[in-house]
Length: 320
Image (cartoon, rainbow, N blue to C red; front, side):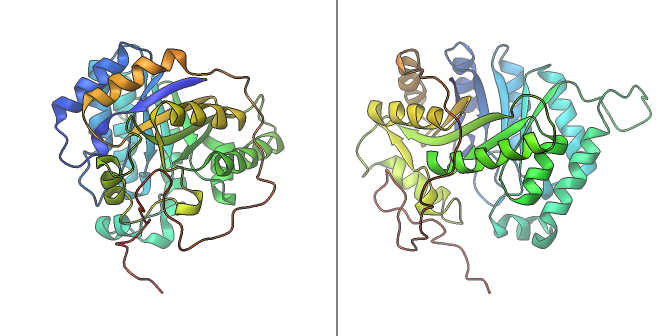
């Protein structure tokens, strides 16, 4: 299984120099990809400009938008930005797309929450229109080879996958829930008559420390303050050697082709720690995705695994 890593652009206060140091170091190996997260109402660095910077300082790794919240941006401008990033990293861009789950982002952008799915569909059609055209008077540049991974497994998300996508990207979900969504994606893929199988990519947080009373828990408390995957389906933090080995084995058993680890801090020592361990991680045969025998029950009192009691959405405003 391939192993990728997010740069710490999602860690508030991180410097651009630190992000680029992570990218350069990851490009030297042993990682398959370097990913950049997307938020709007948060203290992270903007995704597409960060992807362009990462493209400029790397040569080998794929660069991953994981996941681009495309409806928050004007569609024509977003398509042009994506095509531009692809031009800086020919054949290396993976574009994860989704609608996100934080209403605060949409309020901040002035985009109707109720139209987010429709807007994403329109944006993807605009992006498709950039493939291969040679008319310099049209919107451009022409879109080169870009892998598109769709987030989510709702009926609209599955339609996006079969119409526009090359695979599925699961963000911060337990291996069991990742497997359930990947299973739904695989069924939809076959029903649509698409050849082969969709590429299946998982992601989860990680920390070298095994002490839950640490800065990693503090970071995730901040990151999930406005919402995120509910705690009872949240991957939480894979901690220490045992944690990352278990994550690799469990996501691989659910059919993952790649696992991208998301750091809980910006210290490059965390990247060094992970890089030292990647060559020794297990590489079991790829399993087949499947839904859990017993679906997880909603638990409003659940806390995020691998933390000191982090609650998802603790700061989210109440909604009717």
